Amino acid sequence: MAAGKRQMKFAVFMSGDSNYHMAGWRHPDSYADGGLNFRHWAEFARTMERGKLDMLFIADTIGTPGSDDREQLSFTSKIDRFEPLTVLSALSQVTQNLGLVATSATTYSAPYSVARAFASLDFLTDGRAGWNLVTGGNREDAFNFSLDGHVPHDERYARAEEFADVVRGLWDSYEDDAFLRDKISGRYFSPEKLHVLNHKGKYFSVKGPLSVARPPQGYPVIIQAGGSEPSKNLSARVADVMFMSQSDLGEAKAFYQDVKGRLDKFGRRPEDLKLMPGAFIFVGRSEAEANERFEQLEEMVPIEVAMARLQHNLGGVDLSGYPLDGPMPEIKGNSARMSAPESYMKIARREKLTLRQTARRAATAKHHWIVKGTPAQIADQFEDWFVNEGADGFNLLPSYMPGALNDFVDLVVPELQRRGLFRTEYEGKTLRENLGVPRPPHPAARAAAAVQEKATAETA
Ligand SMILES: Cc1cc2nc3c(=O)[nH]c(=O)nc-3n(C[C@H](O)[C@H](O)[C@H](O)COP(=O)(O)O)c2cc1C
Image (cartoon, rainbow, N blue to C red; front, side):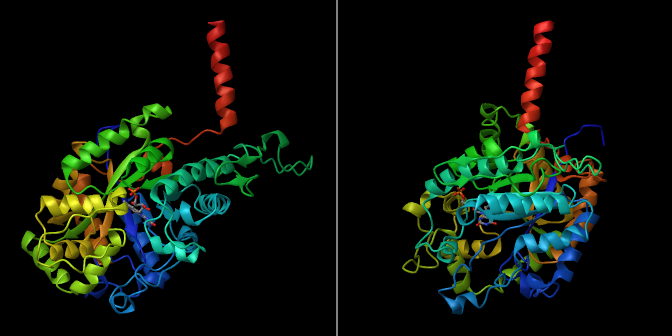
């Protein structure tokens, strides 16, 4: 590989038992008990490190979507699952290089607790922690937080903006070199290097300081997932990685350009934010084998269960009055503000899908891009998106575990490495180093550097 050549980054999307396909848990080569079996998680993480992948990402909803319909729910997996930070803490002790990332939705958590948990994880991993800052895609989470319904979209993002500032402010409670632990003088830390936040805003009142030193990465890597206008602005301002969900290269390119174009306004460079679309992967040793095995999985999903998922993903709409084999109906109303329903509609219009076919799509890959074929065909598609600036990397959605992950690591990674598109060894120790995103300096260090720069300019 030529020095400095841009290379792809990879996350692996894990949730519950981590079989992304709705019938994945029924595949003969999958684990059906992955949700609460740490041995499987340790195996998955080691496989990711063997493949030199960047990060294991746990997507999470706090509550159980669809719990009002226990009949349909009883045909789905991912119901029983680890609390993400708990399992990542355990994984920190059986991994060396892999980034460990979890979702913590800003609508249903408190900034102090999030700042504290992820700072702790960054120490446990020596700088490999990441926080997926989402506003929350599951309206039923609200019912476990003393609310009557999902907080409206705009308000979720207004709260998320302030939430992100409080968390970052808390991570800056101490300067990087504040802790002396000097046994001779008895001074444990330098008092002038403690910064008490004293935040009072619209949503939060948080005094600080955080009870954890500044994290090894300065801030754990911040990831933001979404696609709406407020999501793009939040990502451009605070995120190091954005997970997106375009399923067509033209759309991905437009999105990429749009988001990268917003960074300058916040004093950031385009390369400071890595854009990673979700990619549902299905590898076969031949194209025919990939198609055949894919169809076998598709046939295992009952249509009623797929319909329940689609209606939930579209923001809780009722499509029961529409014919299954008629065209996918247009979605209107409040849910249209969210990006997911719009993404579904784009796919349905582009591929001329019926309601039944759209429901099957929801059960397979939701509104994400489907990448199916031989290792070379998959590498071709990733290369196309990467070279044409539709992506800086990909958030892999493994159809079933561990088979789909093993196939990717054993068959696709070597092909990408041969093409010089992916690393053969980790570049650094921290997740920021491997992703190639800068470590944020402490504001006090930034201020001192600005004073120094001014003085140098005046004497010149
Ligand atoms: C790749 C990806 C991962 C996501 N992960 C989560 C998650 O783990 N938990 C969650 O509640 N929402 C998750 N979301 C949904 C976001 O919370 C967000 O509410 C949703 O995308 C709607 O955002 P938007 O309408 O503002 O674009 C994810 C979205 C994407 C695209």
